[in-house]
Length: 364
Image (cartoon, rainbow, N blue to C red; front, side, top):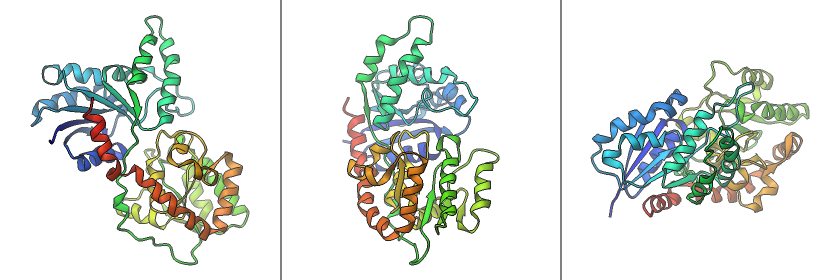
């Protein structure tokens, strides 16, 4: 029997939009997405609930379940729709949170947004985190935030929320990569890929330092620097482009088709992030055939079965440089190692996870 799910995403862009539209496309149920443009994230968290609540009366069907992203002020939405949606089960999906997300240098954390996350968790019937690391990171930091306030700290509610929290990985549209063949030419130098945001929390400086060390060692390689930048300028990226010279075969944001082809050309994908709650870009690159070199922390150890940790997880810049040198010098070995990793990534595809989402949402 087909049921109806209302999916709420006040910041409907990038990976949030891909996730939301992926569930709409792959669920066996009827999923209605209500979203707002992905800009002004603080205002979306503060006021997006009002705009989405105004859309709710036009729904064709009363939902059997609501799935809301962590960018929503869920208590406000539920209060504004209590006449029609008061008894509908609600799940909150935490892509990230505003309590442990690392701040840019010199910026002070505004606890307003962490409190919106906390109040939304209290209001939800179920709370899903995209990784075990994220879940543990949140609940480790939460008591310190609550103790910041002068009284009535809510600490007695933490165990209640933890009891209804679980891990539900991000599902990815991996099948779109299947129709594009690997396009690396025999004899081409190995292609190292950066495919993350051009932001401080992805730590691009360390990535470039590793590449400069390869240059100084006389290694022959190519590099693709993809990813989206929300800044007016990215001086560290421009400096790297100039210094790396002809080694750079791609620079800047790649639209969908070009990005897919780029993933299928690359040999090694590298992350140097200081923050990652899941890692969609890395999952996509591994599924496309890239050999991953990832920090042995954050959510990355969860992406890979333990048998791959010794080969793929590094500890610090020196270890990363040594592993990159080996990878560049042994292209056939990394190509052979990439195939079993690619198979493992299928567990994050919508084809594998859509039924899991349906069951989790409609069984409480």
